[in-house]
Structure formats: C-alpha cells, structure tokens
Image 1: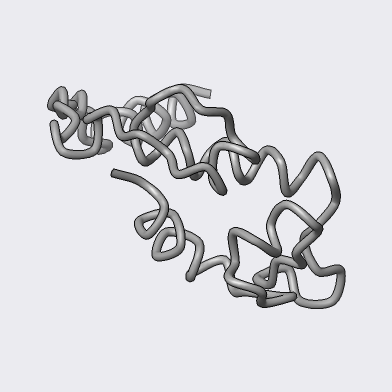
Image 2: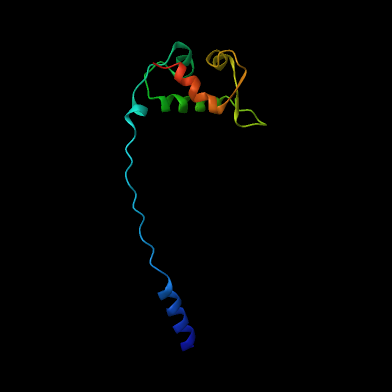
Length: 108
C-alpha cells in the first residue's frame, strides 16, 4: 500500500501548476460604436433610430430568424421577403457575407 501512495504523490508532484491566463480588457473600436442614421429602406426593417452598424446587422439577423428567411438547404443564403427585396436591390437571395456590404450602402 505504501508503494501506491508514493506513486500517487510522485504523479501529483510531476504535474506543473497551471498558470492563470491573463485576460486583457479589449476596448471596442470607436468607429464601430458611432451612431449612424439608417436610410428609409433600412429603417423599414430595423427602425429609424440611429444606432451603430453592428446593431443594424444584429437587428436584421433577428428579423431574418423571426421570419425564417434563411435558406433551408444552404444556411449561408438569405431569402428576401417584401421588405428585404427592396433592401437587397431587387435580388431574391443574397449571401450572408454580402449583408455588411448592403448595410454600409444604407447608413450615413
């Protein structure tokens, strides 16, 4: 029994103590937090209140998920309804990667 206790003690001693990872507090970029005014087309979907670009994208995603506009086969594609068709310049379907580019055209 003494041998088992010694082996357990050696194994415990061999493992190095884990150091606590330092987390640096990242400050958000002021450009992302600047309030922008949406165009009338974008305001029809997300509201007319000025907000940061990130909030517009979040609100559009909320709208897409609420109305189940994400394509069932290819989740990267967004199907347009009547409101989004006008926002997407008449395209019936766009890629999620084009969403930020479209938002940038509709904010000032």
